[in-house]
Every structure is written in C-alpha cells, then in structure tokens.
Image (cartoon, rainbow, N blue to C red; front, side, top):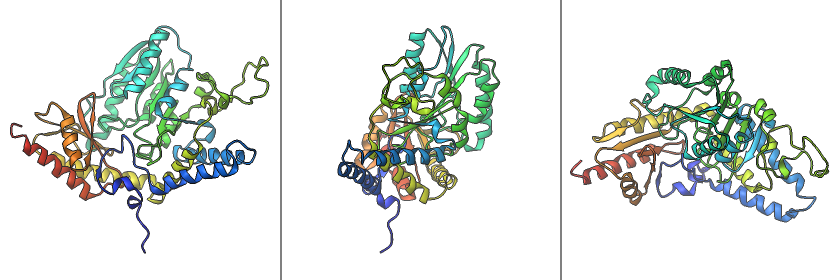
Length: 403
C-alpha cells in the first residue's frame, strides 16, 4: 500500500473544496494523534508529579527550538502565546510611551490590534496616524513598485514623535507582502527609532519570514492558520531592545525567574529573555500537535519550495477569476501570496455568495472592512478545487440575471 499524501492525512479536506486557510487551517490526523498521545503521556506520568516535569520541559524547549529555526532567531527571543493578539499586545503594553507620542498604524490591520492600539492611545493620551496602504493594488508584476510606494508612504507619514509603527507582514485583506526588513532599516535611521510591531498571522508557514522576524521588534504569529496546527497556540518573536525595555503587563508565575522569595523586595523578579511575556499554565499537548504539523510541512519541501507552489496556485486562480465577467479582483496582477480578494458587481451582500458556495461544499469567506470576498490557496489546494470554485462562482453569477 502506498503511503498517504499530506492532503489525504487531513479529514477536513475529504468532502469539500477549502479556501479558508487564512482563517483557520485544518488539522492533520497525525497531529491530532500527537495531541492525544501527549494528553495520555501526561496522565500516565501524573499531571503534577516529579515524573512529568522533564517531559513538559522537553516539549517546551523542542517547540521553541523548532519555531526559532523557522524564524531564524535565538530561542530566547521566542515567547509562547495563545494567539497573535496576545503576542502583539502583551509586550506592546509594557513599552514606555509619553503623552503625545505618535503611533502609525496601517489601514490594513486586523481589528484586534487596531482596537488594542486605540485603547493604548486613549489611556496614554497618544496620537494615532494612519498609513494608507489599502489603496495599493499591485500584484507580483509590480512588487518592486509596491515596496517603493510603501517606503515613500512611511516617509510621508512618520513624525518626529513617532514611537511605534504597526504593519502586517502579509496583509490579511489584500494579500500584499510588506517589505518589513526595509521598513525596519528606515525606522532605525529615524531620530526617534520607533518600534516596529508586525502582525504575522498570515505569514507564518506561508511566506519566508526569517529576515522580518529578526528585524521587527514584535513579530507575533499563530499556529492555527497556514501551519495546519491546533488553535490556542502561537508565539511572538521579540527584539533584544523590547525584551530589555518592555515590562511584563500580565503577571504570572511563568514570567518569574523563580517562585522562591517572591515576598522579598526583588527589584527585578522577571526573566531576562522572552519568557517575561509568558504568563502561567498552558496546554502542553498543543505543542505536540503544532510540532507534528510543522514537521509534516517540512517533509513537503523547503519553505521556498512551498511558497513557490502557493504562488503558482494563486496565479492560476487569479487568472481564472479575472476571466469571469463581473468579478472585480483587488490586485491588478497575479498575487504575491496565497490570498486572493475580490468582489462581484451588483452584489450588495457578499454573505449571499458564501452561503451559495457553502451549499456546494465550496468554502471562502467575507471580509468585513472592506466588504470583499477572500479565497486562500495552500499547498494542499489542487487544480480540481480551483476549477470547482470558479464554476461555483460562474453559476452564482448566472443566477443573478440583473448583474
């Protein structure tokens, strides 16, 4: 019997055409087994015994080592989190801000981080400026032009008192890739040396991230999207200066150097590495699930090989959608990532499209702001799924005679 493929190892992909990897990736059977095995191991050893601690320590260290290899940084710069939001917010809220400081946030950020920055600005009396990159519509053909435009926009919107720049590595709505390393270099040349916070929700295990992780001050990502891992587990890569300058904001035993002597007047009780932003008890079996998914991905080819496959598939889908009358693609040439956003002329409720396609076992999603439809392709996407989606959209449009 031939070994089953990566895709055949994922039950959620058996009976549907799935294009929602940017929302949540499906979990391979072997990763689910790894999670269950970890639960069983912990219960066999005893969940709170001297026998279990070496196992738990090994799981944490091996997970951080694997993540640090993907990120291209030392494991001491990695903190485990529950999700991207906590990875962004916990170190952010510990940074020192002064009244009147300027925060520059792109108009393509996820509502979660925008809300956190707005609350920070309210409590600290900061000023928020918007970096207008939503209007950029260049795909692969004009990637260099996009990068140059982004850098010019940052130049135009930076202030003398800018203290923080917030920008996703891969924009969740347009699918554009941002030049994080070039932006980091520009910020380091600024007199105020603003921090660079990067939302990596859409980039981890999707595009190469090593350089960006190393150059950003806060680079938060999750395992439950493009990494095919379980929900409830993510991580954040931190710069040395953030580790040194940011204070823990949600305190628990994990961020302490030691639990002993906590009643003593210790001026610096917290870890001096990224662990200062870890809080307390977390779900160890999730580490086993994510590690298994990451190793399965590694067996599917190098990071670059996988990314090239994703871009090839997204180019095929973009070309096919571009040939359908009344579909308006967000990017004006094939996309630089696996994210493709579009709208349909004459359709005021994109939810109607999602519901129609869902009945055909075709799954895309609606973005709320802007009100677009979004389809994501991954290495487990195949041409037949793309053809099914294209046919489903054509059939939907044909039912709308007035379009």
